Image 1 (cartoon, rainbow, N blue to C red):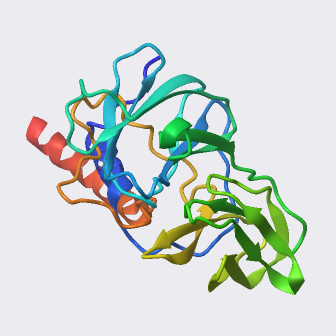
Image 2 (cartoon, rainbow, N blue to C red):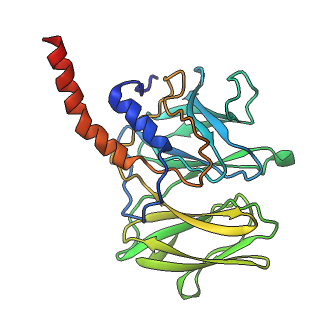
Image 3 (spheres, rainbow, N blue to C red):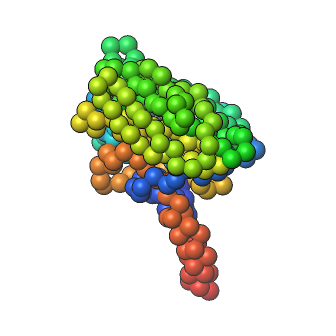
Length: 286
């Protein structure tokens, strides 16, 4: 099983978009993968682990770097994959590919399904553990959106997240928990986060028909709630560049900011530039 390389001009720019940092867009109506493909994204939710390089490959094939220097709280945008089994590994940033991985996981991707592989340090003796969850992109009730909570703060006390009208989006969630989705009315939803004596409030934008993951992280002992849209802004996310050899998404900076965007603006730029590149090539060939 071969995946589309990201070394072509359009693919290279789309890969670069994986590490383009912007503010998290408001939740919008979810779009799901079409027939014959699945989607996956990866979240580094291990506060005690420095930035990592993420390797990926079809099962049984040599792994290649696809994301460099992903820090705590980083969540990649979706990438499109052919159905099948894949192997993912995490190594310390800039470590040699022969370095023993801190995490190695085999995952199965089914067509028309979207997944989040969330990596916590809640394995035996504090080792890394990957939790593969399915993202529900089916339509909620009319005028409503769907919200779930991922507890990635590793605070000593469990986390409770209160939603509108006294509803509980999460009750005593332990580190590493992913709650079921709950339907809430569209609009700006105020939430209250409580962990022991630590309390935080946040506003979550919820669009009708959308699915949202509310990621709970910690920053200097303070809880932080960040919403991320489930489902892609692009109808066809770029293929994961597992054949690039040097890491098509490599970047010189340390991307330890909490959120990576989907590279939508950059992808639109690709759509504009591709015809121009084609015309230049045709002119040279004459």
